[in-house]
Structures are given as C-alpha cells and as structure tokens.
Image 1: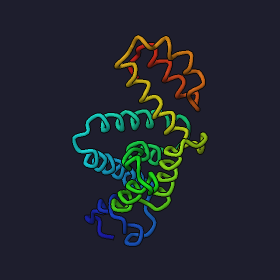
Image 2: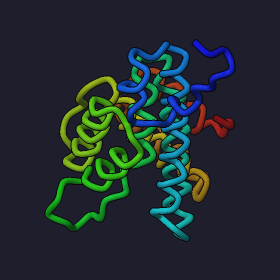
Image 3: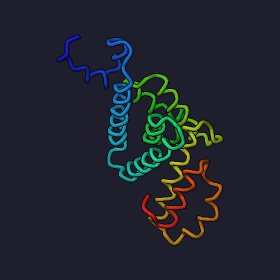
Length: 187
C-alpha cells in the first residue's frame, strides 16, 4: 500500500466498491454525507428560482435530521427523501419518485438507499398509512415544517391548532417539537 495514495475519490465514486473492495465504515459515512450535500445542490437546481419550495424542502430536511437520530431511523434515507419528496410534478402518470430515482442513480447512490427513498416518496404521495420508521420521520418532518410555516405567517392560530395537534404526529419526538413551535420557541 502506498502511504501517499489518497482514496478520497471513494467518497463519491459509484465504482468505489469494485475498485477498492469493502470500504471502511468511516469512508462509507463520508460517502453518504457527500451524497446528501450533492442531493441538496441538485434539489436547488431542480427548483431553480422557486425559493418557496426550496425553503420548504430545507425546513422538512432540518426537521427530518432532528427526528431521525433520536428515533433510530436511517438519517441518510430520511434526509434525502425530505430533500426530494416534492421534485416530481403532481399531475403525471409516472410515480412520484421517478425524478428522485433518476437523480440518485446519476449521483451514484447505493441501490438499496435509492429503493428506500423512492418507497417513502411514493408512500407520501399516496397518503398511505404511517409506514416504516423512516416514513414516519418524513411524515412528521413534513407536518412540522408546515406547522412552522403556518405560525410564521399566522401566529394568532396557535391556540386553534394546539387542540388538533395532539393526534397529528406519529412520534412523541415530533409532538414535543410541535409543542415548542406552538409556544413560539425557536426549534
């Protein structure tokens, strides 16, 4: 092994497994962090000057990160799904995840990660039940982002919303964050 050789390319190259064999856990973590950053950049390119949708996706992603770790969900899957959950046009015959799948494969994401992200995005579009833990995190993150957006525009609705919020969230962690939002705390 050449001590001066730099395997940094393995963090983003989709052929790293074939080239180097089994990758150490530190490099796999770095690879997923780089993928999340690249997905965020691509999401912003996709939405262009639609700053409202970019901000919404960013809020959902922020809440997804806050929920994933404490609940034991897969942070990479939840965060990527949060960033890409609204990238497909609403009125098309193709699955909601079609754009996300194409983008993730182009960025060299692992097939199992692509499948899990696409499953969650499609479930969100179909408004099916609570689903997997990763899906529950995304659903709660989306609701929290909507709640935060509503209270930023109409803080007087806090009292009206608090009664219906008790049953709106799938996880206790999200419920706790929602209560903080409704009290006007910065989350």
